[in-house]
Length: 135
Image (cartoon, one colour):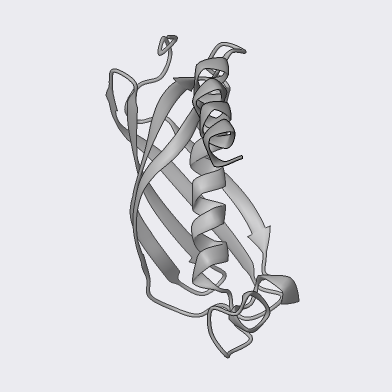
């Protein structure tokens, strides 16, 4: 397992634009044409996924294991949303991030996200075993 270079304080910022397909109406998580919480959470998780990929070996990746997000303000279609993730803690294979989302007007969400470093082949072997059980 490679955690060399992964240390608290590393951060990544990623910009998104709210599209019609990203709204609560479209993803069926609500009835209004505003950024859907599931989409916002996916953007936060994607940003947290991208950060350690720069440091891990080719046979490693991270998987999300915990999310705690407060989505506190709406964002309309067309608005830019900036996601910022900061690696707050590295504990062996466990990475804990502080996450924040801001649109062009205000902070719209914040939270914590935990990911675990895994070996891709070993992880997928476990998945394949589950598939064989269900067939």
